[in-house]
Image (tube, rainbow over all chains, first blue to last red; front, side):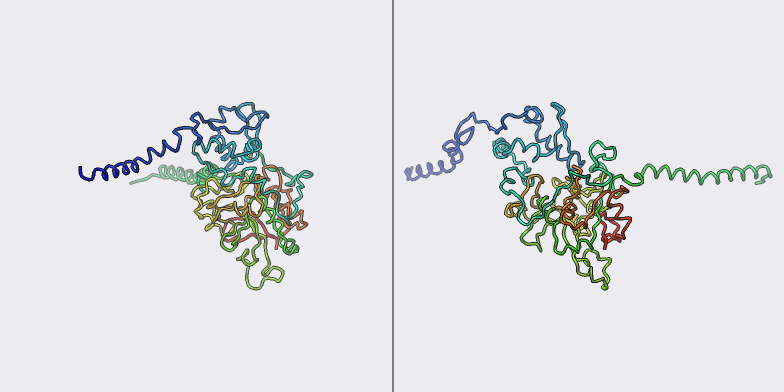
Amino acid sequence: MYDANKIIIGLAISAALLGFPVWYSYAVVPEDGDKDGNPDYQPQPVLPDGGEGCIESVEFMRSQHMHLLNEWRDSVVRDGDRDYVAKKDGKTWDRSLSRTCMSCHTNRMQFCNECHSYLAVEPDCWNCHVAPEKALEAGKPPQGQPVVKDRTADRPPQEGRRAPRQGDRRFAPDGVRHLGKGRK
Amino acid sequence: MEKDRRAFLKIAGVSLVGAGSTVPLLSALTRARASGDEPAAHPEVRWGMVIDTKKCLRKEGCTACSASCHWAHNVPTMPEPKRHEVKWIWKEQYEHAFTEQHHGFTNEALAGQPVTVLCNHCERPPCVRVCPTQATFKRMSDGIVAMDQHRCIGCRYCMAACPYGARSFNWSDPRPVLEASRSLRDDFPARSKGVVEKCNFCAERLAKGERPLCVEACHANGGRALAFGNLYDESSEMAKLLKRSHTIRRKPSLGTQPHVFYIV
């Protein structure tokens, strides 16, 4: 073979370059687990201490929380129905991500994102909804804001008739079902 | 063909009875069809608002309603208001708000004056008709024209359809603006880039039995120009005002039947 040295060196360089994805993943990134190479790594969402536990059982929340939140979203926005009765113990909760869920799970980075980043899912809840820590930074209304006195405590807001609520006969939820029928 | 008197009388009698019974039969039929189609005479709850422009103008430069509304609903004050303005309740020049009333000889008290305007929560909302995803819809229970931001795809058909300019598009993410002005609240969602938004008649407050915040703010500031209530509740502040005063609505010829009334 003529110029064997040059050819062998060239082949070695080519093999090294072509094999880059293979050897790089072995050399730098651990095969499994977290960035520190711990293969047994499991996401550790920070749970609130004490308290009475979540609105539903842990197993239910683990597997179904996304469906629960979607149902909450639809019933509040489309039907105006804000009361959720827990399957676990029949307790009634406000169907609200920020007021109910986040009142215990206050840190979304340590709770939501812990699993979501591990599984590379990106729900877009927080594009609009405001996680508590963000609001804490923003704080109080800006200067010069009009003082809104809440006078609802001492007298009914709508004279003569209270606001419709879930359970009222006429407060039949509306929205999607009616809309499908077209205009009259 | 020969007919005797007897046969002629028989046919005449049957025809008479037949012709006579068609009218009640037909009317009964049409009634039956109509009752299957038509809703009850009127719904029980239709939220509405009366805006007294005289009282409103007495408080010159007052922005209590819009400031409190925008603060409570995470509505940003965008840096380029001409292009990117987002608004739920605002002031519009009289001639622009009431284009059909304007005739060049408007009285001095009103000509060129700012009038408080917001979404009219129409009985027949054109924005709802055009929305391809039903992101905007009319709540049958109380007539509020609401938005489901989760469904909005930002096509802006509703903005083209709304004759009152009551809808705003988020050309950019409002979050940085809200954070910069330190007015971001966590008890009401903000919006993302690329969705349309508008007044929701404080549906979240109505659910708790409270009046809309603009009305509360106006009363707390001593303006008392805004009144809110159920149009079909005889005893409400609203119904009394409507009975007592002459009120007009914006662009009535379009047939949208706004639920916001004006005393001018």
